[in-house]
Structures are given as structure tokens and as C-alpha cells.
Amino acid sequence: MKTAARERRPFAEIVPELVAAARGDKKASLVIQNVRLVNVVSGEILPGMSIAVSNERIVYVGRDVSHTVGETTQIIDAGGKYAAPGLLDGHCHIESTQMTATEFARAVLPLGTTGGFFDAHEISNVLGLDGLRFMLEEARSTPLAAYMQVASCVPSTHPGLETTGAMIGPEEVAEALSWGDDMIGLGEVMNFPDVVYGDDKMIGEIQATLRAGKIADGHFTWKADDWRLPVYAASGINGDHECVTAEDVIERIRLGMYAKMRQGSAWHDVAATIKSHTEGGIDTRRMILVTDDRSSESLMNEGHMNYVVRHAIAQGVKPVTAFQMATINTAERFGLSRDIGAIVPGAYADIILLDGNLADVNVVMTIAAGQVVAENGRMTADWERYPIPESALKTVKMERKLHAGDFAISAPIADGKAEVRAIEVVENHVETIERHLWVNVKNNTVLLDPADGLCKMAVFERHGKDGGHALGILAGIGFTKPAAIAMTVAHDSHNLTVIGNDDELMARAGNLVADMQGGVVMLTEDSMSEFPLAVGGIMSNQPFETVARQSEGISQALIAAGCPLNNAFMTLSLLALVVIPEIRLSDKGLVRISSEGIDIVPLFITQAAEK
Image 1 (cartoon, rainbow, N blue to C red):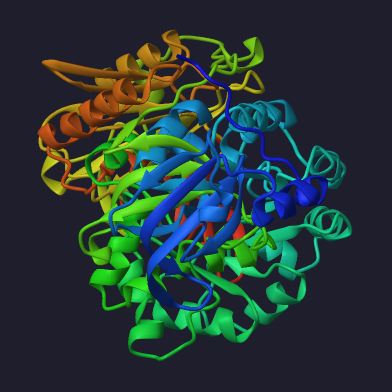
Image 2: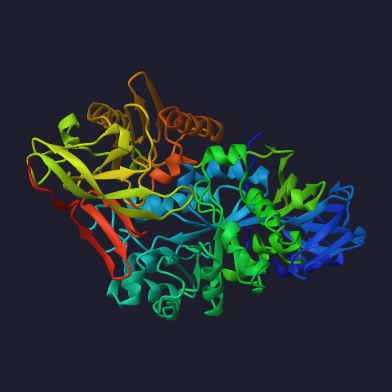
């Protein structure tokens, strides 16, 4: 039976009701007895505790809550299980799971995630504020404590480096932040050079955020000891997830920022960054665990924030401390510790019960806003699906079919060897490396040697703007047979991106993706795997289980073609994100990100004498 997600009412509106329920004059709707309480505020584990809930909020926590029990009170005897606050993801893009907010909620609630801070800059780059509004309204229809951020970088950097489907500036930021208290702030400001050097648009967006009393999130990829990190912090941005070393964490915390430590599907940064605490002794109160992001198949096979917390504990973090990094620290960073992040009177009743050893993070029950929504890994609650707007469908606007000739790389010499800038992929990390390589040229056309393990990459504008495209060369993909992958998941502009070592297969794959109005297609000479993504070309309209199966099919197809990268699809989807060092490809060309800034550079460097 479908039931509406319980409304999360503002604290001030229901104080009389909460106080009456705490006295016992108004009986509790739910009581959880006999728990070992994980108190993330005090850092203790308290045995023999009970929790009383009235509708969506906790009203009483103590050893005896019998005065709150009435005839209609639902009673859960936890039998000594741990009770912890529901886990919070401090930085996540729901779209990167290729699921809508509804299916994302169905995936993560049984895993103990009851809320998060979601930067919808993927759909915003496709549809602008209309896409953001859709994500917000759908998230509101779920049991999650979902807080949305306005995309700060649409496009991800200044105009001319890529083509997106929309533009967002200070006026749009101000408008979106007026939509409600759950519009929590400004999403990651990836265009950090323009912040440092005082670009009017980026500074204006931060000012609009601060005027609204909201939080501005960061994305700074220059080195931790760069003199410009304090400049970035001076703008009011006080949280950052681009931490890949212990030094990155330490320097941000010393400047008063919150350091977010990421354990996504394809980027594994916690093991290195957590050493700031386990070896460096830095206080953890400004350390936050985040995903940024985990694919649907990773959610199915490994988990979400429960996996990240477990991983942090395995690196030597005390269990209670690890839970703090995924609950109260996150809530405090966004100014919401009165509502979420702890099991205390007045907070939303977002509670998880855990069996066995706390370090195993074995979630057996999830309670969201006072309702049991999942037990033993399965959803027990359901709700009406939010309708997908027509504007989010049929968003791939290609002006023509692709042909093999579109993937021919013209060289500045007729025959011989030419030196090129290649993009080298780094496994389990978001950054790339600029490699200078010599490639063969014949009849003014680059010929890649399969033995070198190189691939071509092409990005085609797909938003119905100018129809342009650019070509580049990739190292580290590892295809051992003729293969191509095409996708409209290409952060953040989400143009049609095609990677492969066979021009005919690349054209076929690209056309298949365009014909199905977005998604992923993986081709070899004798196989094909499809992953349709009809919503904005980046999300599926199918159930979580179907999405996970299709995502896994693409991963297996990449492995079968010889690609050795862990969670390769998620890594490949970042190769057009032009704000992450060192070098990327957009529809405008090769974009290099250095300590000097961001600019377009030519594919060819020098060439040897012609034969």
C-alpha cells in the first residue's frame, strides 16, 4: 500500500506538541526500547536506553519512557541493538547514480542513509532551474531528509570552454534559494580560479547565498599549500570535498573550513585523507564523510554511507567517531544540528538500528521522520511517485547522424609522427594527467597503434545549440579489442561523449545513444550493452534494481573489452569535466587546468619532419 512520506514540519510550529508529548500528556506515536544508544553528541555508547517519538520528531530519550506510552503507541523492542542517528551524505549528486530521487531513496534508505545534501548541478546543466525544481520537488515526496543546493557552475567554468543546456547566475541563485528552507545553499563552486581572481558572476553567486543566510560549498583542486586557498576561504566558502591527501584536510580545517573525505565508486580518498586524524591527530569535528558519488551497482553490491563509515573504521577511526563524521558533523556544517544528525529531544526521528558489532555498520531497521521505512535490507514503505515533467524528456537534440569520418583526427603533417597532448586516466581518482606522446600520421590523419593502448575521445554538443564537436586522445583505457562506448553522462555539460579505438563502432554507438534519447551504449564487434537514460539523458525512469543491473552490464562490457579500471564508467564520465586538473576534453577542445588557470590548448604540440 502506498503511503505519503511523513511531513517534516518546522520546529517552531510544533513546540507545544513536542513539549506535551515529552511530558506524556500527548502519547508517543512510537517508542523504541532497550537500545544501546550511539550518542554522537557526547561520543558515548549508552546501554539500556529508550526513545520516544511523536509523529516526525523525537520527544524523549532516557532509561524510562513509560510515561509517553499510550494505547496506540507503536512499541519496538530493540533487544539491545545499537540505535544511531540516520546517516547523512554530506556531498552527493543524485543524478550520478543514474536514478531519480525516488529510486535513490529506495536504494539508500535500507542502507541507513536517511538524509543528505544534494547538489543537482547535473540536471541543472541540462535544464537549468526547471531541472533543479524537479529534483527538489521529487526529493520532497520521499521520506529522506533531502536538502538541495543551487548549482553554482552552470556552465562549470566561464563561457567558451564548453556548451551546456542552460546558464545560472546570481539572480537565478537568489531565486532558487527562496524556494524553501530545504534549499540549503550554493553547490560546489568548481570555478575556483574565478572566485580567487574576483569574477563578478562567481562572487555574485556567493553574495546571493550569504545574503540568504545559506551555506556555500567548495571545490578547490590546487595544492593544499597554494597561497590561494586562504583567498578562496575568504570568499565565505567554508566546506570542500576535493581532499585527496592528509595535508588537504589539515590545511582546510586550519582555515576554518569543513573537510569532506570522499569514498565514491571510482575515487577512493578516505584511506589517505583520514590519516590527518589517525596519524596527524587533527580534531575530527570538522571532518565529514561523503560519497560524491556511488553508482547504482555500488549501492547494490557494497552500500552507501554505511559502506563509507565501515571503511573509515577499517582505517583506524573509532566507531563512534566515524559515526560522528557521517551524522552530527555533517548536520553542524549545514547549520541543521537541531533537526538532524543526533538522537536528541526535538530532532527528527531519523534513526537506524544496527545488529552485531557496531564497526560492521549492519543496518537492520531504518526509521525516517518517525516511520519505519525499511527492515533487513528491504523497503517496507512506499509512496506515490512524483511525475517526471515532459521538459526532462527528449533532451538529446543532435542535428545529424554521426559517421566514421567524424572521428578522424586531422594532423598538421601529411606523413610521419606528430606529438600530441593525451589525457591519461588515473584509476580511483578524479584527476587526469597530461601526457605528451608521439603518434603516427598518414595522409594527414592520425593512426593510433592498438598496441599502444590509446583511444580516441569525441565530445558532440547535444543541447541543440551550435552542433560543434572536438576530438582528443586518451591513454589508460586499455581496450584490447575494437570497442566503443558512447554516453550522455559526461559531467557537467552532459554532451554526447564517445570513446573508442574503432571509428565505425564509435559512430554506431553515438547514434544509438542519440536515438534512444540519452544513456550509455557499449559496443564491440560482436556485442552490445545498453543503458537507457531518458530523464535529461542522465537518469533512468526505471526502478533501482533495473538501473543497477543495466549499470553493471556496462561495467562488465567494459571489462570484457579489456578496460582494467575500477568502476570505469564513472571515471570515463568525468573526462569532459573541465574544472578538474590536469586536462579534459569538451565540445570546444582540449581544456587544461593548471596553477595559472583554465584555458584551451591545441591537441598537437610539435611534429617531426615529414617522410
